[in-house]
Image 1 (cartoon, rainbow, N blue to C red):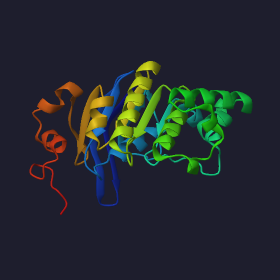
Image 2: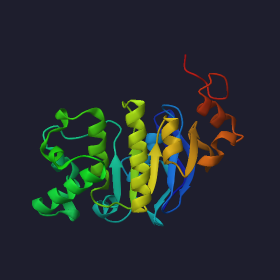
Image 3: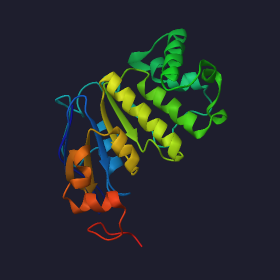
Length: 248
């Protein structure tokens, strides 16, 4: 479903992506791990077309991600943002239905609200939450609203950007379980970037380690602890000693 071939991206002298090769089959949940500043977010934004690579090829369902109708292309995606990214001035249901009330997916307000309430129910939130504002919700509830918005339009592909950032361990576990259930239920292709190893083990079918602008290792999540790769071993153990230099 998603294929990156020798993708490069630099910002001035900072070469962030140095030949990324990554293949994500349809219906698979791929989690990309790696330290801060290694290019995980840039890889994700490159697929969406928010960043234009300097060279290389990005294919989505066999077609060049940079060609064709951009609105129709983006309609295939759902996104759970790291910070929630909810609109403070809109009630929860309008946040969830934001995409459904605009562009090629536009629905009547009553229908959009009904879909929003159903998606809120799917992530464990009661209908009365629909008319509240984001500031009235806890961090965990806001994250659930963000997840409801990500799945509102029944996307084929869902991106999760650090889905458990700012959450306590219990709520992180709840969100991880919800993500896994929903991805399997929808048959969606998922791409997640995270530092949280509990998220990796809960969400992933396969894992890719991005370091120094390239994919150092990729394989099934079951092989993570016995990858034989020193970068992966250091990252999952959290050790200061290894090929990944700790910034002191």
